[in-house]
Amino acid sequence: MKKIVNTTSAPAPIGPYNQAVIVGDSMFISGTIAMDLQSKQLVKCSIKDETKMVMDYIGEILKAGGCTFDNVVKTTIFLQDMNNFVQVNEVYASYFTKDFPARATIQAARLPKDANVEISVEAKLF
Image 1 (cartoon, rainbow, N blue to C red):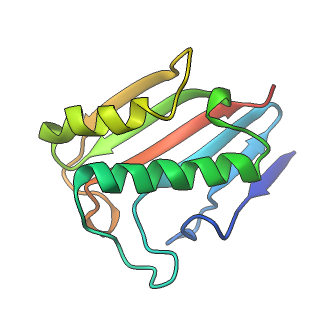
Image 2 (image 1 turned 90 degrees about the horizontal axis):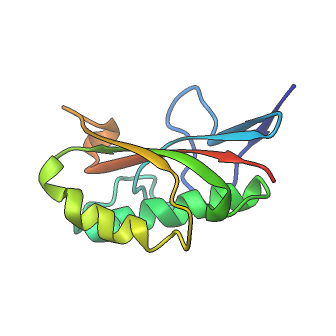
């Protein structure tokens, strides 16, 4: 059985998917980008601000599924420009207090809505 997780505290999906799905003791969060909740438009600002917005949204989705960043076991970061890696990493690291999750970071030719950063997460329900 799978449980669908959606919250109004993070951007609604822009396609045929959900913000997150829980299967067994695992939560899978879809790629999240920096979208304004009211206008539903992409927020283009500094890469640090965009990353913070994405991580805050992921935190809200985690909370809606009964988790925190402590539950995260794997992340995937997609960057429009790998030159932003250091700045994204600075913001990303501030969301974890111990035992960092496994992670992949890749540069993508193009992200949804031409975002600069998209992050997806996998978490375990403890």
